[in-house]
Length: 90
Image (cartoon, rainbow, N blue to C red; front, side, top):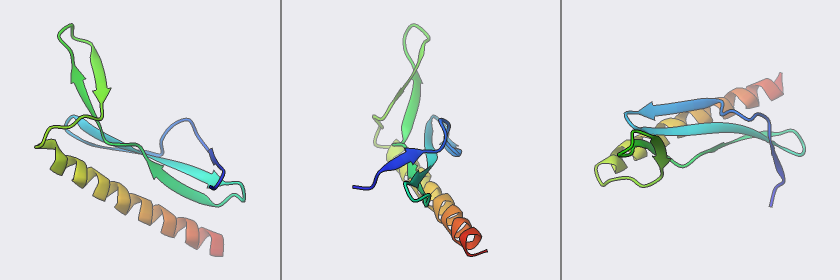
């Protein structure tokens, strides 16, 4: 298991599609090497009292939205990893 520390209390990116969102976090190993993680896709909703909440529970029709968000997060992470690699070579 690799020890990790979060470099910030805020995600570096949030990707949204309607009521769904995913967050991307930048972390670093003890050796200072950056790596990226994501939250699970979350869905926001309003209860009967008008209060907002978030859940990881998705309807069947929201699964394709979630898959698209994960794909977009993957693309962003790959771009950031490549930029980190290029910066480390400089």
